[in-house]
Image (cartoon, rainbow, N blue to C red; front, top):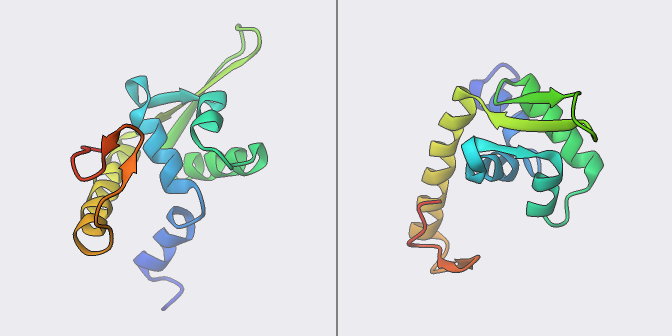
Length: 119
């Protein structure tokens, strides 16, 4: 694949481990927003270092924005999906529908049947 290929360039940051799951967890948050600690607790197995790196990458790509409230103690940092990030959610939903059609018979995630989940 050519270096300048649109798919290749996009996959470089979206296909990195945890990136899509971080976007999905932000989408599930109140107002598509979550604090760092909330993201960490929603993603068992991710280290603080990796979460911090992925958030910086996603912010650099314009998929999320970070709001820091330095007046709070401890300092409050919230991450929110941007308009671009919200559009990625549609791709994640399409990926899920593809997986349910072709790869996964049925998986329960959380307390609901994956095939009935809106995401």
